[in-house]
Image (cartoon, rainbow, N blue to C red; front, side):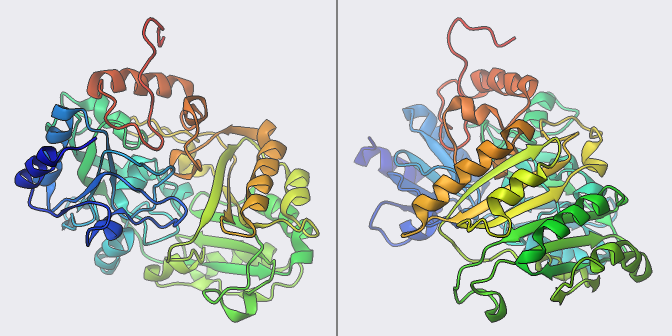
Length: 461
């Protein structure tokens, strides 16, 4: 329980606003993109800079106050209801170095902001399907890029990190310094060892880009899925593809022609020419009769239109899984034509390519060797919430035999420690636990997908 003296000390130590429930600014700084998972901490700090983060972590460590961090509100997996939330959305510095092909960004910078500055230079990063996602949280959780088959995981491109560890120290970590092990674990280990205030990414040159989507009627689902499996088995690694079974509500934020429908959406992206793209996508254009075709040469700045992810907050439940192979029959039974599923989107994303290659600098990201990633989202609002939860459980059970784990950013709600363990490979999880005991013995960072401290007397090896 925070005392008035504690809070006076915090306010004296920082420049940014400190607010409490009912104060102006509290709701803004605690807001997430999922209104059903809203933080209600005892206090929230809107950090004005890295020095505020350091001061607040020291303040919390001296008092044993639990901590959490958020910037854009995308990474919430379970709400906190005590302690101090540190909001890093105000850390908006961007420094691009075209000579060495890197960008250093503050903890609050979103991918859309960075791409607006790098794309005119012919440079891009290993970003995901939505430009509104924060670069730091995405990369710390591994990062599943749209162009992952060509670029690898998001974490593979991180070159250095500025992080405030639970002891209140500001550390510059990279692959060669004294904290090289911490650098490894921060790339894929999410927010278990402190608060990242800045991150340097390696950028990738590109020239031509080709992409878009094909939309098919619901009844074509089985034919499209089989064609997708045959087609993706032949794609080169500079091409990326996914398929989504959509069951769209009749809501204003969707295009009018899609409201209340259940189409099948094939997404495609390629670092390549118009001619090469047309040749690669032709097998899918011959399947059934797509009623929408937006595939062609693209301005890379519009890459967010490929997946058509919503930008605004939505009350959702979600679940993710890495798959060794695709259980087509089980998926069609759960979300295909005639399933009447309440699940709004079930995405099958092709893995492989550069995501099968070990990075030049070690990290703890799972998924190398997985064939597909399965990600499902449903509405979490009356009167459909209970049906959504049941459908997620059924789909999970139907695909469990094919699952090799999860990625922490797309895992879904943070469960018990056994459930959270699934977000990392066993050896990586043991390393994370060992580091947790070293860097956060007070367990200050205990919310969300927190790695638990090792139990006394139990060896982690």
